[in-house]
Structure formats: structure tokens, C-alpha cells
Amino acid sequence: MAQTSVMNGHEHTCILGEDETEDKMENVMSFSSGPLTEELHCSICLDMFTDPVSTPCGHNFCKTCLNKHWDNSQTCNCPYCQETFNQRPDLKINTTLREIVDHYKKKSPENKTEVLCDFCEEKKLKALKSCLVCQSSYCETHLVPHLRVAGLKKHKLMDPVINLEDYICQKHERPLELFCGDDQTCVCLMCTVTDHKNHNTVPLEEEIEEKKTQLMKDVWQMIQDRIEKIQDIKHSAEVRKRNTEKEKAAHVELFTDLIRSIERCQTELLEMMEEQEKAAEKQEQELIEDLEQEITELKMRNTELEQLSHTEDHLHLLQIYSSLCSPINTRNWPEISIETHKSMTTLRRALIQLQDTLNEKLSHSATELKWMQQYAVDVSLDPNTANPYLILSDDGKQVRCGDTKQKLPDNPKRFDRYGIVLGMEGFSSGRFYFEVQVKGKTEWGLGVARESIDRKGENTLKPSNGCWTVVLRNENEYKACAGPTVSLSLRVKPQRVGVFVDCEKGLVSFYDVESSSHIYSFTVRDAFRINTWSLSSGLCFQVHNSWHSLFFCWRLSNSVALLRCIPHAPNRDARTVTVRYEYMYRYTPS
Image 1 (cartoon, helix red, strand yellow):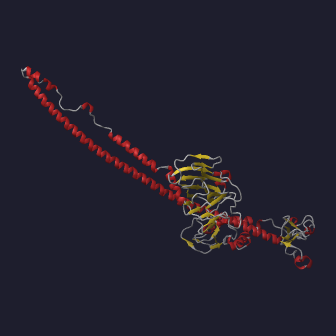
Image 2: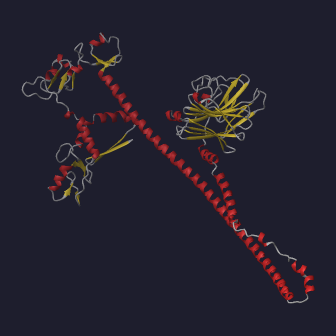
Image 3: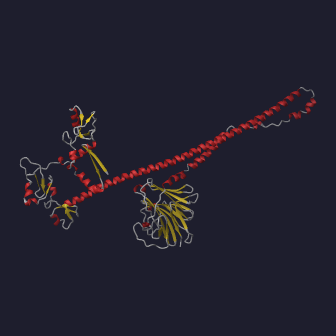
């Protein structure tokens, strides 16, 4: 970490490292007695800055002093380096420098009450030292005996103070020059043989050095903690930005597909309407031609009737009357109509088709699951957590149950009762997703559990014990272990289950990957908010007499994700559960 300050044109840069922490803290605590005081004085009035301002050349002066200097001069130049400015600069108060000056004035010994010599008779001079034995303060002149007389040279001198009684043991009236570690109080030499006999005592100088060192370490640790927090915030911001970009890209892809579907539906609708229009025009033309043909035939009959109307051969007219009354070959035109709303029917059909497409595209579970799958993680198994019955592969990606218990060193991380193994990797925040293949399994359980799960005893899978799981029992009974259990109605048997965890929202969700359907969700807001969560993975295995239970465990900083698969009988064929990203165990019952 680097700090830079500018004082009277000189740039001071300090690069801090862990080895320089104590020196830096000592400089900060005693800066008032160092050369910094010279940098806090105006070179015009020679007093400490009042409303300090900086010139373009980098030097500092009191605002009033510099304005007066320029008012009495024909040119505007720097009083320190004599650099001339073409126009009078607009002076702004250097607030940082002013705060430093104000801080110095408050901490400066000059502002403290002055201690006077107890032996000056007329004009009392300023005391140079105070004697804890004599309980008096001395100026330079009256201090001489303490520097020359052998008996007085043994007295303990210190910087002058007014409240000397606070430095004296009230019981023994001796200087408080030791510190009792047992009672955490200052004591005198007499106290060490009376009230504090056999106590752990050290000189005050030694104790204060230790406390100063510890204090500086604590302050530095606080600084480091805040630096790490800033880094965590920046990292979270970067992760959020990356996730936002991924989500934006996914949303753009979704809407692009929807737009293409709408455009395709529009094109198909217009083409269909064009074909229907052509067919309608053809039908109309055919109808017109038939009507015109019938009109021609009717006109011919009308002409024939007109001719007959003038004949006087009534017998002939009666003989042909029946033929004249017979209808000609015409259609029943009142029953024929033209479809004028066919386009609306077509539009309705197209919109229904589009709605089906939209429903498919906007299927909540499918879209949500695709979004969650971008948070898939890859981890390795931690052999220090594995139950002694579990055998891990060399790459830490596979685990299986052995026939005998291995001789492994016991440690607080290892599971002794349940066949569980956790992962090595951890994630402090964010979202996580993994998939587990459960195809062919008659019983299984999977989910998320707190890292504080009891590793040395019994633990029922329920939220009150820090577990959020979904299980399959009796081949077709799906339940969420919500305490009490919740029966789940699934349309199809899941072949692969996806588990998604959102630490910020305190959400654990389960999905059927094949059908992209939601199975169940737990909301554990309080647990996620109170605790710091990280994630790693593992498999676990549990033995009940001749029955064997297998768990897949995914650890969150205070949590573990679980998969449990139980064969119906000990003589079943070998069963395999393959987990996405190469997590696999193979179990062969004995």
C-alpha cells in the first residue's frame, strides 16, 4: 500500500509492507516531534498554516499571507521559488493539509498545560523533568543536583507531568514502575512482596512496549481486514458484472429467437393468405362464368317463350308446356355464399400456433434451468473428510465403498458414522449448480446441508438439522424433507436431477434436467444471511447392517449437498451413479 503527500513542493511517498508496519505506526504516533512540523509552517509568516493554499508550482502558504504578498507586489510569483505566473491564480484551500495541521495542533505538546518548576521562587520556569521519588518537578537549573549527586542520580526521572500522584502507589507511596500481569494493574516494588507476591510482574517499559506492539498489530490487522473486504466487494462486483453480461447475452438470444419465430409466423401467415386469396379469386371467377352461362340459357328460353306467345296453335302450346316448365340445369344460388372472414380464421389459427411457440420458448423451467446451468462448478474430493469405508480415486473425482474399514487417522473433519466425503474447493458467495444422474435408482436423496453437519454421530435429513433434501422412497414416492416431509407429484421419474444454490437469496432448488421441470425449492434466507457460505463437493456412503446407502455431498461453507442412493437388496447388480463433471461412484453389494 502506498501513501503520497506533498509538503512545500516535496513529494513524500511511503510504501508500506508488513515488515514496516511497526515503524509506520511509530512514525504516525510520534509525528509531532519529527521534521513534519517544519513542513506545516508558512514560509511567509513562519507560523503554522492557517487556511493553507497551494500555488501552481506546488508550494504551500497561508491564504491570507499569500494574498497580502501579491497585493504588495507588481507581479504574482511564488515567495518560495520565485516562479512567476502570467495571471493571478485562483487560490483554493488545501483541505487535506488543513486537516493535518488541525490534527497536529490538537496533538501538539505546545497546546498542553505547561508544567512549572516547583522550586523557582520568583518567576517559575518551565519544568524539564519530574522526579517520581521526590514527587516534584524541576527546571533545568534545579535539576542539576539530580544529575550530579550520587544519591539523587538513582531517582527515577520522567518528562514533566502535573498529576504526579497518579504515578505513585497510594498504599506504599513508592513509584509505580512495575506491571502485574495477573491483576492487570501497575504496582510498586513494595507491592511485589505484599499484595502481589509471587505474581507475574514486569517493568512498565517492557509491558508498554508489548502493548504498543500488540496495539499496532491489531490496528494493522483492522486495516488488512478492511483491505480484504474492499477486495471482496470488488471481486463480487466483477462476478456480478460477468453474470450480468451472461444474462444479457442469454436474454438477447431468447428475444432473438422469439423475434425470428414471430417473423416466420408472419411470413407463413401472409403466404397462406396469398394462397387463399388466389383460391378465392379462382372460385369467384368460376361462379361468375357459371352464372353468365345460366343467364345465356335463360335468355334463350325467354326468346323462345316470346315466340310462342304470338302463336294461335293452342294445342301445340299445351303439348310443349311441360317441357317449358322443366328447370334448366342451374345451381341453387341462394345456398351459395362467399367466405369473407376466412382471413380472420387463418389469423386466429396462426396466433394460436404463435402462442404455442411462445409458451415453448418462454417455458419458465426450461429457461430458468438453462440460466442456472451457467453456474455449474467443478470440484475435487477431500480425502481428509472421507469415511474410512470410502475409497477415493487418485484424481479425487471418484469414490467407492470398500468391503473393509480402512485404517485412517481420525480428525475433526472425517465422518465416522456416515459414509460421507466432502470437497476441497470452496466458494464464499454467489450461485452454484450441479447435476446428479439417478437413472435406475429405486431410492435416493440429494440436496444441500450445512458444513456444521454432525460428522461424529446421527443426523436426520431435515432443515432443523441443517439439511435441505429431496428423496425417492419405495420406487415412486418423491418427498421433500422439509420437516415434516412434503409429498411431491412428478409427471415423470427424473433421470438426472439438477441442484441450484443461490447464497445471496438463500435459495435451494431442484430440477428434472431431462424434462426441464421444477421439482421443489427451499428458502433458507436466515441461514444464508447469518453465515458465510462456501461450496465444495464430495460423495458420502453410509452402511446399515447389510444395507448400503450412498450419498453425494456438496459442501457449502456452512453446508453440504447430498445424494443418497439405496439398492433394494444386497444381491442387486452393480449400480453406477454418474455425476456431471466426472463425479462417479460404483457400488457392488457383497
